[in-house]
Length: 632
Image 1 (cartoon, rainbow, N blue to C red):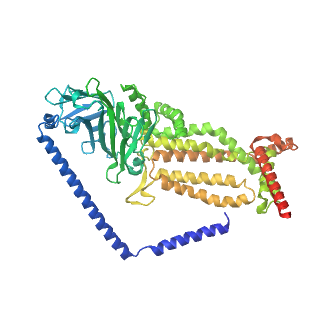
Image 2 (tube, one colour):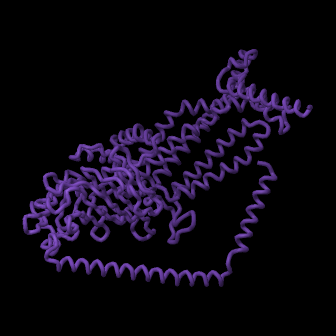
Image 3 (tube, rainbow, N blue to C red):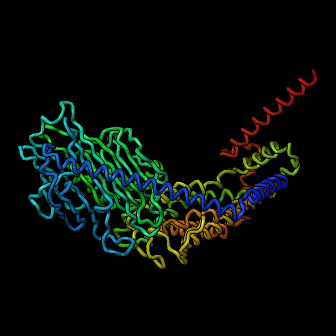
C-alpha cells in the first residue's frame, strides 16, 4: 500500500466524519425528537397493554363458560384445589402441580447460582408452562384446565388421574430416575369413541422464560439456544442472537431443549415430534434476569384407545458431556438421542479435535486431581510438546530465509522496476530451490495453532467443570474476571475490564512483535516496505481482540494467554539457540551439492520455481504475440 493510497483513505475518512458532524441534528432538534419518540412509544405501550387486557378478559370469559357448561368433557375435573407434589433425589427436586399434572418447578441441586445460593432453579410456575391438547370430535381436551388427583405418591413416583365420572379418564404416571431423568406415561381410558378414526396426534405447547444463571449476561446469552435433535441424526438450533418467532422445524425430532450455557430442560418423545413443529426464541434485555423467551409448538402420536401409553422423558440438569452420555443410557426409548450434543464442541473438524483429544486429556487430568487452572496449563503444555517438531521445522525454514537474505538481495538487485516483479520472484525462487528452502514453511506455526485455538474456543466456554472454579486471582473460570467495574455499559467495552483479557491481548502483542520481526528479517526489496503497513495491522489485532474477548470467560482468555506466552518463549529460545553462521555454512554446502542441478533440491521451492518459469514463459509469448499484431 503506497503513500497516495493511504492519503486517499485518510481523506475519505475525514469526509465521512465531517459529513456525519454536519448532518447531525442540533441539541434542540434532538430533544424534540426524543419527546416525539417517547410519546409514540408510550402510545404503543398503552395499545399493547389494552390488547393484552382484552385477551385476558376473553380468556377468563371462555374459562368461565367452560366451567358453567356441565356437558363439557371432564367437567368434573375442571374444578378443584391445586396440590403440589415434590419428587426428589440427591440431584434434582421437581415440584409437580395437580392442576395440569406437569412439572411447575425444577431445581438442580449442588450447583450455585449467580447469587451464591446453593441450588439452581431452572424455572418455576411464573416462568414455565406446559400443556397437552387432545383433539376430540366435539371439543378439545386441554390438560392445563384439568385438576388431577394424585396417588401412589413417593419421593420418586406419582400418578395423576383426571376422571370424567363415566369411565373416561386421563392418567399421567411419573417416575424420577436415579439422577436427572424423569419418565412420564400418559394413558387414556374409555375415550376411543371421542376421537375421529384418523385423529392420532396430540398438540403440545411448551413455554419457558430462560433464567440468567451466570454473572456475565452477554456471554451466557451467546450460549443459550433452543436446540433439537433430528430423528435421522444430528442437532440444530435457533439463532442465539436474533428474534425467531414460530420458526418451522422441518425434520422429525426426538427431543427439544430449552438450553442456557450450563443447564438444560429437555423434552424427549418416544414416538418422535412431527415435522413442521414451530419454535420461538426471543432474546431478553440485560438486567431482566432472563436470557430468552422460549416456546415450542409440537405434535406427537398417541393411542386414543388407551392400549399403548404415550411416553415422554424429561431431563432437567447440567450440560455435562459425560453425564449426558450416561443419562442417555437410562432412557427406555432405545434411541440414539445424542444428548451430549447439548455441549457444543464446534463444527466437524473442531468437534473431532475436542471429542477425541481435548475431552480425554481433560478427563484424565481431572481424574488425577488437578484443579481447573492447572488443567488448562497442562493441556497447553501438552499441545506445545506435540506441535513442537513442526514449529521447530517451520522456524528453521524462516531462519534459513533470514541468513540467505543478503544473497537474495544480490540476486534480485537488478529487478528494481515494478514491471520486473515477475523476474524478481523467479530469481528468488531459483535461489530458494538451490538451497532447498521452502518460503511457505514459515506460515506453519499459525496453520498449526489455528485449529487448536478454534477448538478450545468452542470447548472452554461449554465446560461446566470450570463453572465456579477459582484459580490464582480468578474467582470463576467460566466468566469474566473484572479488575474494575462500573454501573453503566460503554460501547464496545461494556461495564468492566477483564484482567485475563488484558493479559491475553498483551501476550498477543508480544507474540505479534516477535513474529513480525522474524518475518521482516527475511524480507527482500519492496516486501520490506509492504511489511511496515502489515506491521501496523498486526499491532491493531490485540486491540480488536480486547473488544471481542472482554466479556468472554476468564478460562478461555487465560488459556490463550498461556498459549501465546509459551509460543513466544519457544520462539525466543529457538532464536537464541540458532547459530546463523553454522546454518549458512550448511546451506552453502547443500548449494555446492546442487549447484549444477537446482531441481535436485526438490521440495516446494523447486515446484514454485517451475510454476513461475511457466508463467514467465507464457507472459513472454503473449508479449511477443502482441508485438507481432502491432507490427501488422
